[in-house]
Image (cartoon, rainbow, N blue to C red):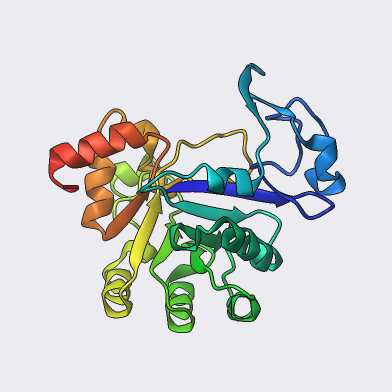
Length: 262
């Protein structure tokens, strides 16, 4: 599965872009939401650090869907908010890729969950939904609300990096979780078994230049390159059965070698 970050142009075209502006990763500049698609169509994509062209242009969501091969899945992050879910569902329907697409959002409180539920229920086309829950903000209570309201296959659980507090085990003082936090607790794993959904951990590299980047307990791709057992074995032991990573080849190779993926 590949995660796609989606934003809409002023005339309603969904393009695949993480940032709200074009400046960091394309040859253009300005807010995506303030521009018509024809104004940004064909913009070259650039490496965010070196500004080297990738030899590709800013893609629409439909173009990405139509390029999907056998065995590919997509997790669409609606960066412009939950109201965009029906628009994404329409693109999914027209591209004929509904069985391989999910959408996600970090709605957390009961009002937001109810609104997402109503938006999906009112959409002309059904679409699979993965909520994103943050342990320090939402906790186990939000996880329980989500699985009681939705028929979910998966929940993405974000784990805050613990602060280095005196008296904690040495590994926690270094900012690495020693227990996975509430979303990977015995209670969370019990919920997953009862409601038949998967716990999803994100081990992506952390970019310190992106405000609010999640540390996911400090057990992330940087550490996995040095000590994969301390990342992948840890999360699997604490109930994770979906792992998002910036190192897919390395991760799959390790999982196969360790006997976790056949």
